[in-house]
Amino acid sequence: MSTDQLPTPAGGCAPASLHAEIQQFYARQMHLIEGAGADPEAWAETFTEDAVIELAGDTPDVGREAIRASVAAGVAHIAAQGWDFRHWFGMLDVRPRRDGSVRTRYYALAMATPRGGALDIRGSLVCHDELVRDGSGWLVRHRRLVPDGRPGS
Amino acid sequence: MSTDQLPTPAGGCAPASLHAEIQQFYARQMHLIEGAGADPEAWAETFTEDAVIELAGDTPDVGREAIRASVAAGVAHIAAQGWDFRHWFGMLDVRPRRDGSVRTRYYALAMATPRGGALDIRGSLVCHDELVRDGSGWLVRHRRLVPDGRPGS
Amino acid sequence: MSTDQLPTPAGGCAPASLHAEIQQFYARQMHLIEGAGADPEAWAETFTEDAVIELAGDTPDVGREAIRASVAAGVAHIAAQGWDFRHWFGMLDVRPRRDGSVRTRYYALAMATPRGGALDIRGSLVCHDELVRDGSGWLVRHRRLVPDGRPGS
Image 1 (cartoon, rainbow over the protein chains, first blue to last red):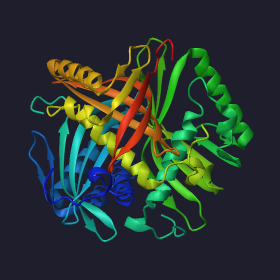
Image 2 (image 1 turned 90 degrees about the horizontal axis):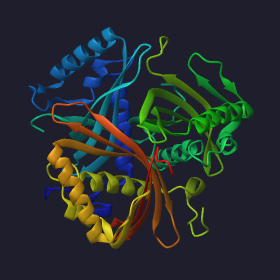
Image 3 (image 1 turned 180 degrees about the horizontal axis):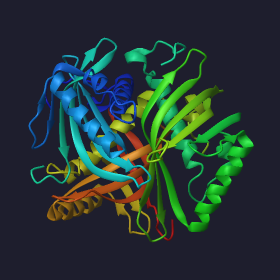
């Protein structure tokens, strides 16, 4: 781990207040692109203006507008299929840094249920975020998604 | 969101103490209806006397006695099949309200493993609870379960 | 529950600080045996010298060296298959005890994704740990794993 991490309780883990904030940030963020009320605009607002999303092997989305456009296309595709789509995050590790930003690592499951059909768990990913404070909340500055099973992963 | 929410840290999210309490409440509550020690009586006691469980599309269970009878039937069915049944909750969002109650939203996975057989993840739900304080713990006053993939969801 | 549990808030549940520490301990511990950087040595160091891992029906691993050897064999097997293997923990209950140790119960999902293949969720387990403080962190002194669907479970 890098040298610019804050000393924190329990071997460098995040204090409970920060851990709880990040968990709830993720629960709300991911819900923004799920279901009938999916809102790509509001989702994009959970990223910094200059944020980057990297999906291993793909061209990154650079900047809030590219992130919005990319997720809007995904949301439209899901709606057209009539799926209920869910993102589950788990096994969250939170590491605060000296500059006030936070690095996280977590696992994600992507799952879809078609109307009248059975749940399909599409795949598992390992995710790495850099988060920065925004008032009383957080924004994602960088997200790197590494799907399990990729030849290069 | 309604106007009777308390102002809380990090954009209206629950403080860590509350978030940890609710997570543990759910872990204990759901374990009460799983496995050889399943106890529908104790499960019913985690709801208020006038509690309601709504499963989208079904007739609601109204009152603790209806909730007990309904889950007792489910537990008996699972035992007769010889399944190990688990409920996983995740992506928990907790919103405290001015009156001391709490609104939560979370995702649930229902899964069963038959004796000698393979795990079957039955389905995914989005759940909405209203919780009220009961001494040092919590009780559910209202639970609304919306299974993914329902024609009406 | 035994009489040597500490009185804690919310009906005997762990305070938020402890709950957050244990969650992060597990996230880091399990990541140590996953992926290209899997490190059975570092994994073994998250157990006490005299730790025991019991998998229902199998001969227990007794002592840190047996635990290391056992997980090293598992890691080598997974690497030979070319799988991305993940352990998800959820529904965590944490009970602090008067002697400073902690008892936990949690559910686990074991999942593997072959290169170029689909996610396979292998099975569900109920896990019971005894943890002891080690400086600012934690060590596992005893882990009991009960796979769902076992004839004897």
